Length: 515
Image 1 (cartoon, rainbow, N blue to C red):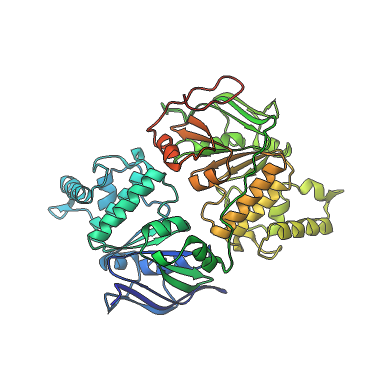
Image 2: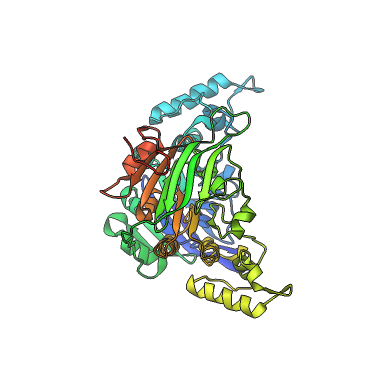
């Protein structure tokens, strides 16, 4: 008898059929992966299981008994816990305070018993071998440790079925290995785990079985050992997807972007957000900047895009000092910029697809103050064809999938013909096919002579397309490494975690590798 059985689960959002009579089952003590493109329905299905959404039809059974799950509290009472892709933690609280929040042990039935809370949380931590302390402040933890706190929250509430949504998306290679050790340990202790992920090699490494969803339906259930990543990709997309990217060797030209001892300070903070950052991007070169969230990647994106004024140092574009220029001025000069926050910074969600495509080029579609509708239509239709963008041109861009929104932004920026492209977290949350397309377009930009600054916490994409890898830790560049000779994720991860810091500070006019 399956530990979990969902039968005929259907969920509609208006005209969108997110789950179409889905049958899904999980055996006790197994690690089960769910894969599928964006919009395939996998997260909706798990939200229904956790009580965040209500199905329009279908049933849920746990250990053969019918289960009614209307809220996350109902799910918790029946032993179901969920770690979301974006953690639900209060940074200023301690580990223990976050874990017991809402179910605090009481003294005399009135007051939170903090000593008892620390003791209980400490016991859960010790019994499962986690590397965190109950009194540690969450704001001081690494991303991997924050994820441990989320898992401890579930175990504290006696969850026997754990759902993890994209659990490795923000982890280093070392932290991923640690998470997998934890999951195997939980499995040995009798826990059942469901993992939603896009990373097919991780599906092969950690899961026992895998369910593949496409367009709201289950299209296959496989024993993981009997299927390879290429077959999983074909099942997800409905066609074969090329996994190998061709990054031809090219001799780099002159610098298009130079950061010289750039610092960024926040008032009242002792440690700078960016600390003496020096980096050069040349034409026909992709420089990938890797790091764990909270170590300066977002701040680096902000300063090179003109969104924050630097505290010290200098930024040059084609030899011209642009340190004090606004984003609007940089855009007028041809800055091509694909931000990490595609929904709020990269797009106007209530505007149409066409309006989002021309927003950076609208002056070229004006005559005597009037928009040239024919020229706009030809321009937007051409971009839609070149970038395989799905969705009506007159539709609000918010109605498109995440992959299509990213294609619109990328198409708009590459149409600017700039020799500098700044791209931050370009495939965050995208499926295999969309990610492959984005990588190919970035490589085309490089082949056309542009320099590319790729800011990313995804080491697979950094190693897949970057020529040079720079690593950030606590706001500093701690290594600049050529992407050659089998450069490994493990080595980069050591720098990202601060385990290595032997970087030789670059001399003026260039960058050097580790001493």
